Image 1 (cartoon, rainbow, N blue to C red):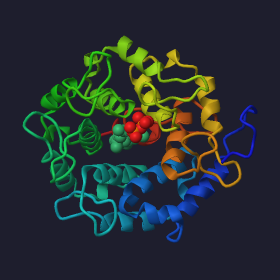
Image 2 (cartoon, rainbow, N blue to C red; image 1 turned 60 degrees about the horizontal axis):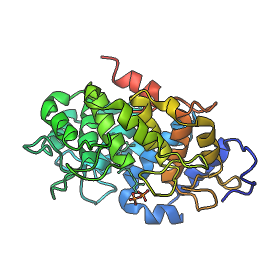
Image 3 (cartoon, protein in one colour; image 1 turned 60 degrees about the vertical axis):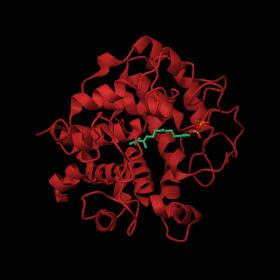
Length: 320
Ligand code: GRG
């Protein structure tokens, strides 16, 4: 909760957010208990935020990596925590965390990439795990993960792209399966996957750009679909998509910066979904990542498709 009137422009309280993230990780904290089963995700959000604030050095790399490797299964996939089942989502988070520490090379890349590749279905779509749920989130995750591992040749990229394009709607947006409603989160996944595979020509940039910029509400925050409330996390899902299709100048950036800053807990750190709500690690990450996309001073630049700092992406993707 913010202790400053929302009419005043506040600054990013970066040091407090760093302290909040380091505290949230403590075993006895409330956040750590409720997030136990998706700790890998929480670790990706927290560690990426620390890196964006240039404070990754505050955590023990050795501790993080030795815990992370206890989450890997024989299949090559990673679970949300030690002793849980593997899922493509946690596998991407694990790979992203290793990328932050420049430690991808400790992986058996053949094994991890085979786990991901085996989740591709005949129609080009991806399942999230052995239980088979299909969603364009999993298409993005597979493509992002395999691109980081430099193993995109293990899947049928053409079919993967064709499936994503089949989820495009008349409003220019994308849903989780063919015919499903457009949603900003799914749009990020589809546009991100198309960007990584060099297939953005399939996007109708003007109609999608129009749909996305209509997500900005009077107070400056963005929602994820029509008639919904603004939420800090859409600062990421919407803005990253607008950047990838070159239409970010269609929203009011200053108003969005103010909305995000007004969602900070100025006393204890952390960022919430909306001003005056309770903070959590998910919104803290997406708030800081949103500010990064908005070129806020003192925050490292993040890559809109890979959701990793640009220096990390340059090191991994654009070098041999
Ligand atoms: C590496 C950044 C990154 C992501 C990995 C998991 C994933 C890929 C993408 C998730 C995309 C997605 C569907 C995001 C939306 C999350 C969200 C806040 C959903 C809430 O949906 P509703 O219907 O909320 O509860 P609204 O805002 O529509 O009321």
